[in-house]
Length: 146
Image (tube, rainbow, N blue to C red):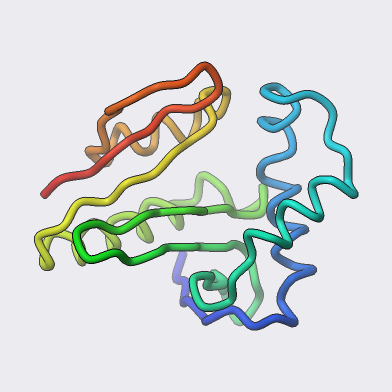
């Protein structure tokens, strides 16, 4: 399935919240307890920076979110969320392959953190060459090196 990325704007916040809830609520609840909408909205709003966020579009419709932060010596993958009906269609894999290819060209690693309860994401990252470099009870910290 073909996708394009579009830089986020402040007006995209409602979609950012919706895709975050749709893709992450189950794992947040497994890890931290009930999803309290007001608290989660505040957390998501504080982490939403249009400069680092891109919407994933399929046929012109927003279906997901990618957030990356570029540092001098690594790339931090902060978010890769897809609406449930667009998961397991290869979109996330394609985006990650594009990101790893770019990082390889630049000679820098990619860092990410993932909730330990999100087994699907862990399998995807593992399959694409990310390795666990540290763990906390609720998260795994992974890296990709060229």
